[in-house]
Length: 218
Image (cartoon, rainbow, N blue to C red; front, side, top):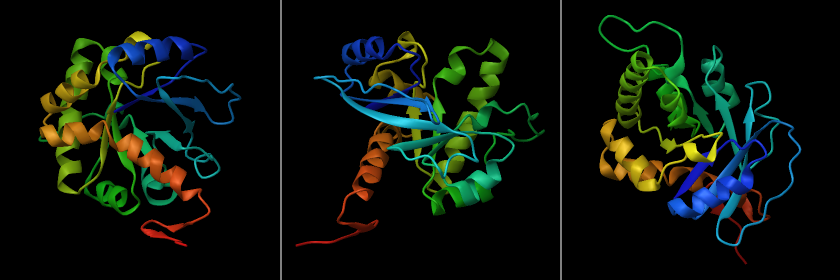
């Protein structure tokens, strides 16, 4: 299990809370071109990600490249191809009469599957939202989970917290995913998909990597 967080000079506090919550892995995410000091931990495996704008994503070199949803989402899914996109549900677009304007549709889902882009559902989106807005976000998340399942798009549930106390235990996030309509297996995978993607990206940098599923052997 792994969580994704956005520290602001509070990395050590995040590590303490992560350990108490039972995490073995933690991904610190920083804005593109941020200079950081490497953090050491004996109990938590630490990974580093980049929060990039669509025009920065292809330049960013990291274990994980994350892009926030914007009015350029079609271009992000089709050309930019980050590892993760989040915040699709937070758009100010009004919902339609018979379904939610959730930020995802059939075309974007097919592009996500083709380009191996993971859709993230951050707990942070709900924590700071007012009651009415939170209900709207939850409705959109539920719709997006159905779309992701239908088109085989991988998903992530993570805190995306900026404060360590915005983190939640893995079991709580799994329960949250199930309450949104995920099957139990899907919810568990949503806490593992980040780590799988990071490990694949690290593997790609190895000298024996040619392409996904192909390696040089001695």
